[in-house]
Amino acid sequence: MSKPQHHTLTPGTSVLADFLATTKENYLRDIRSGTGKANEWTVVMGNEAGDLDSIASAVAFAWLRTQALSQPTISLLRTDREDLDLRAENVYALGLAGLSRPKDELLFVSDLAEFQPFPSSKFALVDHNRLASTFVPADPPSIVAVVDHHADEGFYEDTAEPRIVVPSGSCASHISTLLEDAKAEFPPELATLLLSAILIDTDGLKPGGKAIDVDRRAADFLVRKSTVASFLQGQGFNSSNGTVTTSSSSLYESEVLQSLSNILSTKKEDVSHLGPRDLLRRDYKEYDFVLPWHPSESTIRAGLSTVPVRLSEWALDGKLETEGEAWMKERGLHILGVLTAYRGATKGKRKREMAWIIRTDSPPSPSDGEFDFDALAGRLWKGLEADEVLEVKEHKKYANGTVDGIVESFPHLRVRVYTQNPHATRKVTAPVLKAIMEAQT
Image 1 (tube, rainbow, N blue to C red):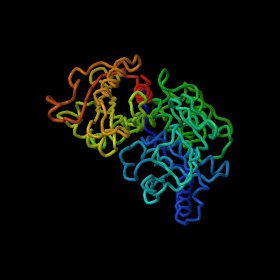
Image 2: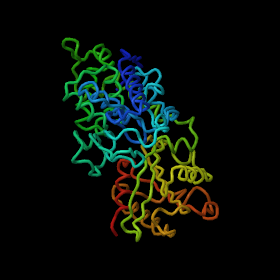
Image 3: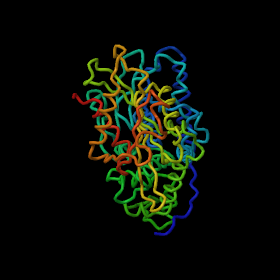
Image 4: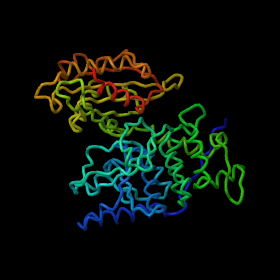
């Protein structure tokens, strides 16, 4: 296959940017009015990792509910405004979607920090399926919709409509299906944003990869309505009345989609400008687990950070432990998993490591001041090592941490480092962690 050429994509209009800026302005005005009008809004949000799939899905679902269903809805990014710069691929894709000032046009959690309790009580969840405990409104929260592709935690079955929790390469594919089924009108730049999310999550729709039928159907639907369509016509794709027709194989082979996918992937993988702390928080998710096996049924908080760089390039000489402990204190964590993903230097094969840190100087609640962290560590190590999908093996270089004498250097930490199945992403690891923590015995 020939090397894809570079194609300059530009947003067709500012319709999407204007919509987002206007809804943000109106929502904040209704909050500040103190009239209770903020409760008329639905807040749609992705997960706290803030990846392109979460952003695109939230933005598109807000468009669908507001414009097609006449239900006022605001998309919320669960990251701080300044953290947008941690993901160059997001900034690039938002630019393609016509957002020239994304920090002003989008609503971030930091924009709502002054409002306590949380100003709205109706929520739609995309790219995750359980409302985070940090979103506590004055009235009991109502989850009116769930669209996700992760493991189903079984919540909101009586209130969410739609409630779609089905595997896919990208959550954006499910959102695209909803747009198609509703026969909703939407601007080309929104199609490009959703398409970008699908491409980055499925390695450009690579055959035999993460993409499944729902992703390929969504990409076929979106590409014909996107700013990419004119380039496909120029490459000899079939067209009728100005509408591009494609097949799943031709989409993968398209030079313009290969080019877009490569640009997005390159920007995502280039984290050379980020230090250890930014690497830990750049792609991060958080979980609370009740421990039924503990006498007091304590609740612990765990975090999983995905880092696209091997440990040897940023975490040695105690940096993993020092920066990990600092991040755990900042987030109130008892467990931190650092999941690295990278390609080998010789054959370019995908590889993964996982480093686990347990912090023992902050007992969970309730625990009556006593908590057996050795039992927690033993349960975690045993569960990970027994899992047939993760296929973990003791790391040959840093099995017990990145420094010698770790007990003396970091007395409040328990550390274990593994290599693992290169195909097991965080989407696989998170349910394994949940099962280990919430097992009855």
